[in-house]
Length: 348
Ligand SMILES: Cc1cc2nc3c(=O)[nH]c(=O)nc-3n(C[C@H](O)[C@H](O)[C@H](O)COP(=O)(O)OP(=O)(O)OC[C@H]3O[C@@H](n4cnc5c(N)ncnc54)[C@H](O)[C@@H]3O)c2cc1C
Image (cartoon, rainbow, N blue to C red; front, side):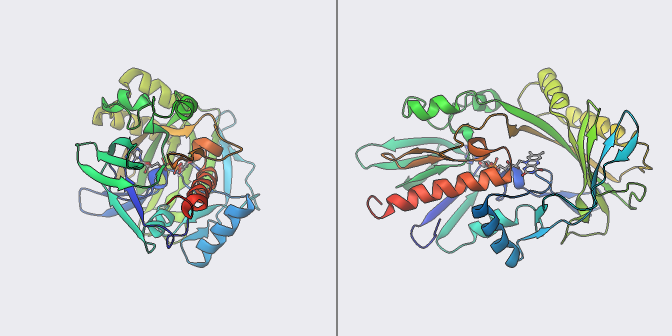
């Protein structure tokens, strides 16, 4: 969206900064070392020409770079690394210096005002004024807006109630058609485990690998091998299988996981990583994070790319509209921005 055409307010979750599932996590060890991890999406690939053009523009501004390391897979049946790609099929891009660099740069564009650490508790349509009113989770008035882009399906998801005990921000009755599409959208969870080692894991022949025939692990990535990262330690991020994560959630519920659960998960994923037979030493840092809705398991607006109510100037966008990845989220966000821009001259 051209930020000169509108004044744009970005209001972002309870999180400390921009990024969502493209966040970069900052951790501190007991002895005060600062560590950074891309604990959500490790990289992304693009093929849609419109998105490719945008990514090249970001690349020329130094916001993203290609991650050129070798990737492969590990099979727990044969206990071997195999099908190691010499030439990647499609380019893997990462944000520099963290996956959140794109979102950060968008928030810093002129005409954009950002607020973080504020969850939207309620969005109300003021019919007389034809404006959206946003109210924070603690009841604070966050302002009135001529148009609204909601970038999370949770705006109407009843799953929110299970996690937070609060009703979803948007009243389902206000937009029954859109709400219907978003209702009970299936999602796949994932646990990510962040590891930091004093020495490189030099027996692992690749910097990222998918894992076959494991009920626990699905992927492992060497985060510190990405361009623009600190190499004072070697950092890896492990991803659980969806099946493993679903199992844990079935035992513990959807509420924020306890430290006991997270420690157990961190240990189990690390042990599976060690049992690849690669010479994996003890990390000096190990921590798990739960992504309760890591991947949407359905795409609800592949043609239109976002949900749109012209009368109320409401767009709902995100990866769940197009495809469960960064490219899908960008594609959907672009569609939402275009819808608002197209009506700006007549309505806004
Ligand atoms: C572990 C993991 C691995 C992944 N691997 C890959 C990969 O290899 N390649 C790839 O392309 N993609 C991958 N993905 C998926 C990718 O991260 C997502 O598809 C993409 O980031 C989705 O972007 P989005 O903007 O649609 O949603 P999100 O990034 O989830 O953004 C939604 C935002 O809305 C905010 N929000 C929600 N509710 C409220 C509220 N009430 N008030 C205010 N703000 C709110 C949230 O805080 C969040 O910032 C992975 C994701 C995970 C978790």
